[in-house]
Length: 123
Image (tube, rainbow, N blue to C red; front, side):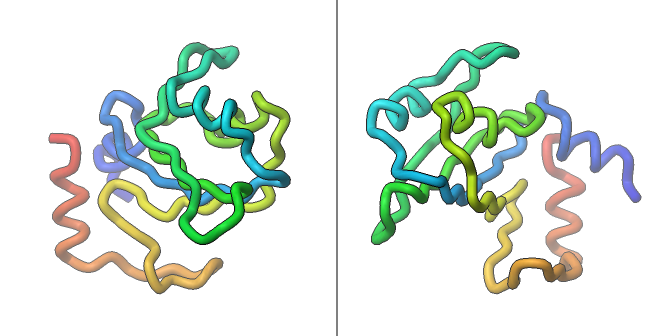
């Protein structure tokens, strides 16, 4: 219900940090991994990720990807570029907030400290 805050959190110019856990339909080929890490050209321009990593102790069909881009469906489009399908996509970090200890499909109210932190985000 705060339009200014919504704009700061969603507009690409504010470069809000997001981290996703991505579960693919098959193992990510190392050449594709390197291309994603170095930046790749999609139909709407160059996309650079801040970081991509395989999940420790998991198979290579699961990665974390960190980015600032606010482009529509960007994570899905990155992997579709290489003909991967995403089984599960979970944003685990957004603008300083995590979903630690929060089961899928549930929500929690923000603490007063988190609200203050978000209101000063991007200023």
